Length: 265
Image (tube, rainbow, N blue to C red; front, top):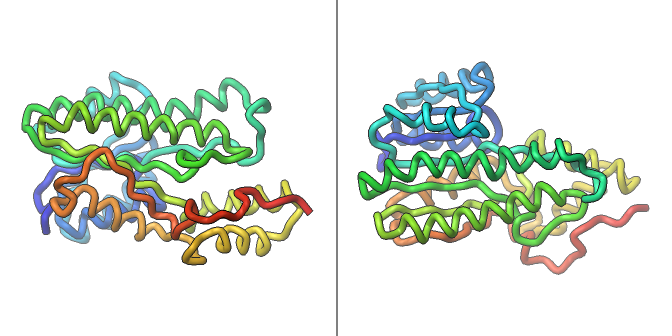
């Protein structure tokens, strides 16, 4: 119960790994601020958290607006943990030169600028209290790039830079800033990737799924709970001397020497 009574902010808590991370902290009896645009989608998760004994407050937040983020953070007093889960995928089947400006801005605004705003306003609170932990959720395409996912990949590379730079600046105040990097994770977003890839390369769903599994050393796809467990560890005192680091939770996909793209039939 290390996080009992601790103030934890989680963005993007409504579904998938965001929900799993929320419930992991709820089991620890944390005081949760669950932030996102769609409060109706967040409320059921907040109810689950409360049933586990945690305090859970839902806050409507457009993280791409600096003033909105500042207002959400003001008045919280102490902030012990910030977990930035919220993110968007962007198109699944476009080359870099096919993207529109609106698509580019839509991905970068949430995946980079929004997280920058959260850290910008949370870090001064942590600096004053001389403690705290920030865990950002990245992606393996920020380690190796990915065709047909250029803008999403670029956003995850940028997030690595933000995380490492913030770790250097916040470290003297006892604040850890780290990155959990999921590979493919079971759920609707991964299903969309599989279906879009199957259509693009003229393969069946099962063929594409098998290809993704075979590109993992452990031959399996991660679950939301795998990401939640890693996040809880990185925010905890067990990782007290870890900062500016990347914990990759991908069943070993970035280790493999297989071609990164399934060839068309």
